[in-house]
Image (tube, rainbow, N blue to C red; front, side):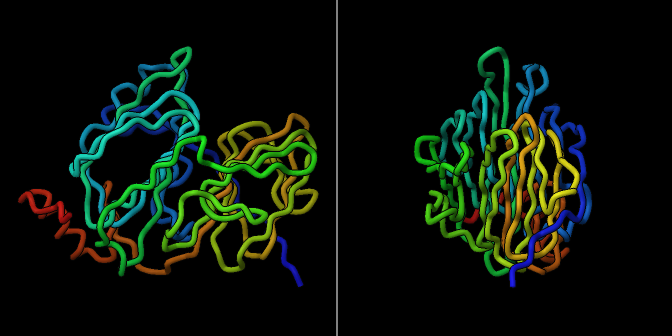
Length: 284
């Protein structure tokens, strides 16, 4: 017997300042959020004002997590302590596994009309994988397959699988699914979901209802946490809707988090910052 996931909570992204003075909206990442395990943070950096974002994110460390950057408009130039560098452009995705440690910078570049748009998601790593070698999976927009739904909807499959179509980001330990979904007005979509996995959605255009008829519609910058179940029903509002669908297998381990470093104990966290101070942070 199937169980439809129902809405547990809807919250709205809140303005914060990060990096060297970047103004963005944070949907997830305020204090302990065990309900979203293995996900830690979701930032929305859409803006039409270059002064809000051009100061960027100068050199900073990461350890123990994965950062997923998904661009809609503008671009981000990046470089790191391992010598990697490049530019993420509209439609591109960078899935960075920080693992044992990396120091990098991310510097936004304005797009048409001064606009910048995108998202960054942080996913935790299990204790057994926190010190794995760092790696990138950088995916160009043209490499991301899409599934055309009946009635005109489109699903861009970044990670995971939809209707037998697999996304290009693979071999992630928490078995995540990351989808960019667009639905026309009034369209309905049903998606099978692994029972026991954390599932949430973030609306970026229009209005979308999650769960059975009668549930509230969520709008731009609303974060929707879903309860457990093995399927999800989605209905677009009168103007259609677009949202990010994100799911993953919970880790269920302690989280000790300070700034850009997330470890499994206070001792590991202290050691990471000691290594930053004495120059032994980078292992690979």
